[in-house]
Length: 159
Ligand SMILES: [Zn+2]
Image 1 (spheres, rainbow, N blue to C red):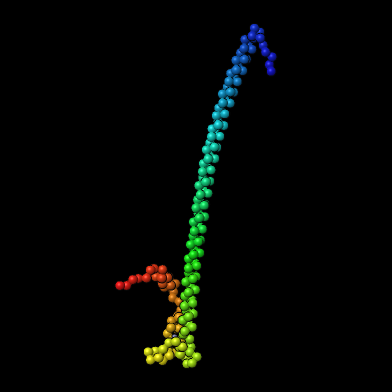
Image 2 (cartoon, rainbow, N blue to C red; image 1 turned 30 degrees about the vertical axis):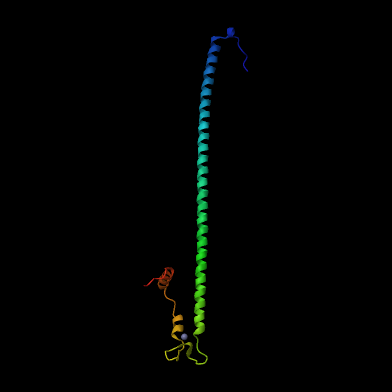
């Protein structure tokens, strides 16, 4: 620390130096205040940015949770539909197997259906029309789609 000069011993030059030092310190203090304000502004911006980021993160989490719930619901619905379709296919295959069990080449009259007869009770030639209908090639995709669409609609009511 500088040695203290008595007021009576203070020269004009020393007084000028003290005023200059006071001016320099005042300017430095002003600059320090500006820098403090800048730091405070930067902190405020950082805080706002952090709050915005947190809000965006929370929205992203909500969107992700919503998407996950939708995906789960869709998967559940798809599994249910698959189960329904498989059940329907199994029932259709069982029905075809039962029909094939009835319509076969008759052991007692080879070359004739064991089930089908004409109006006079005469066995029909084997393979019978029922078996030929079952053995027809599957309809094309478009026809199948149209049939499937028709199956999903409620039956038409005819009065
Ligand atoms: Zn038959």
